[in-house]
Length: 86
Image (cartoon, rainbow, N blue to C red; front, side, top):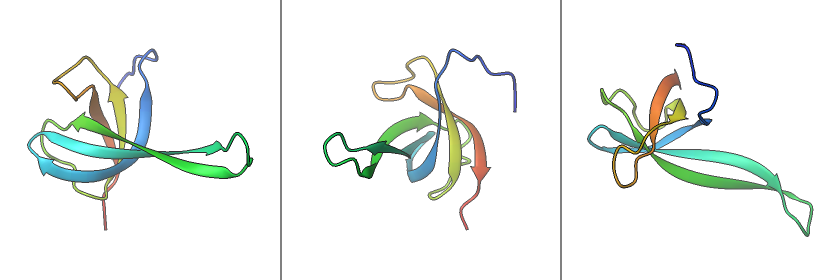
């Protein structure tokens, strides 16, 4: 892994869609405690992520990093593919 600027946010998630050109949708899941019921609940957020070489496929586990705005919706890019889908 290359040198990383620590000011930028880094997330890990799974590729939900790879139907666009040079763009993938990454679903990032986090667990939080419900404020009233104190039960741990999963929350999922989807990010549009820049994938320059179209290397990612649906189901891949990827690490993404915040970047400058690349389009109306894209503010993240793929840092590395952690695990390929089976």
